[in-house]
Every structure is written in C-alpha cells, then in structure tokens.
Length: 304
Image 1: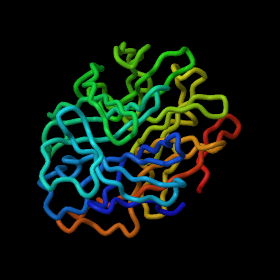
Image 2: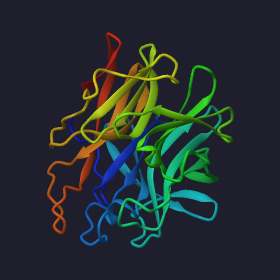
Image 3: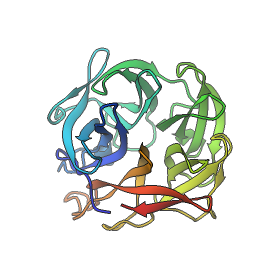
C-alpha cells in the first residue's frame, strides 16, 4: 500500500476522484491544496485558494501530473503547468461521473480565499465535458443550504439520479437530493446523520449499495439495499482505513471500477511528513489506494 501520487506543485493532493475514459486512460481529479507554501496567509487560507489538479495514468498506478483546470468565461480548461500564483476563488472536491452521454463534474466553489471555516458560503457547481479536458459550466445547484460541499452522484435502483453531500448547516452530515435529468433537483433530507462527517462516496458492490464517509479518524461505512435507505456497518465507532503507513488515517476518497476490481483512492499523510515551518502542522499529503471487497455482507478494504 505505497504512495501512488504526490502533487508536484504544492504537495497537497486531497479529495481524489479517479475515472477511466473509453480509451482506457485513467484520470485523477483532485483538490490541489497549497500545502508547501511558506506564507499562504493566516489560519486555514492554505486549504483555500485551491485549483483542481489533474493527473493521468495508463494503469492506475504510475501517475503523471497534467496541470490544473483553469477558469475561463464559460467553464474550465485543462492547462499544463502550475496554477497562477494569485487566485481569487477556491475549488474543492471534484466529483466526476459519466451520465451515458457525457462527463459531468460537480465542484465545491467558494468566493475568495477564506482564512477561517465559518462565515463563507459554499456552492456545488455543475460542469459538463466530452473529453475531460474542456468543461462547460452549467451553474450552481439549489440544494439544502449555502454550506454544502463534497458532492457524490450516482443513479440508484429506482432510476433516479441522486446527489449526496455534506451540509455544514445540518450538523455536517450527509443530505441527499434526487433528479430525473441531472438538472432539476428535489431535496430529500438527511441520508446519513449521526456523527459529523464529510466526503461521501456511493457505489454498488457485491449486491449492496455502499457509502463511505470521512469521519477524520478513519472512514465510516454505510450499507443499503437500494441506495436510498442506509444503515451503518458495525457499531458507532467502527471504521475502515483508521491507520496509514505515515500515521494518521485515510481521508476523503472515491471508488473506480476496473474490470472485476473496485479500487478506492484516498488521501492521507505523506511520507516523510515534515511539519510546516510556520505552523507546525503536517500539511503535505499523498494518494494511496485499496481494493474494496464484500465479505459476509460487510465492506472490507484489501491492501493493494
């Protein structure tokens, strides 16, 4: 279970989402946190001001940096090299799905570069693409509040598309909305409550639907027969990926299916994890992956 990828610009790869195009090329979209900057600003400014980084691979193991998705008048365009040194917007947590006709991406977007968590509206914004390089903006979604982040999208057994996200205004739990066309969304309330969490990822495997969430101490797992009604796997304290080789635990990740295998890419502390000179925090991160399997109706993570 070695490191698969480090961001060569800021060394702060987080929230990875991997997809495979019809030519067999693997694409990783991720939040490019500014972890290595000596003076990014006060407080949590280093977590903001991020672009969406992109890496590509022929096998899902060996990755090359491809650039960042740079904003333009009508959307985003993959540009090689590092992002601009000065930006005025924050983008987080790309969710990328194929809808049968085109690619769709759902980003968390925040105006400016906040240096604290509260007091700043967040939107989930839609984009579409034919080639994973050029993205046309379709606009922000009207969801349960203006504090929603970390979209996950899938089509469930009833034929409806569902979008799950963390709603900070609801106690940082997962809310859900449904749609017939990925344009108009109906609010369906809380999907998974309880302990605060973020970064839902939803998929089918082994005859069940699964939701993995980041509880900042490992990943909580929830199971469903239909992708609509959820129950927690194990007790309230049960998690997977609660340890990693560099210390700490697994954070916000996402699945990708390749043949018979279901892989889960996630981020965690990098090796070596030198503290930031200014703050003393361990900010640098890396992407790893595990294979997911279902054993006795339980989801397990198998080291790669």
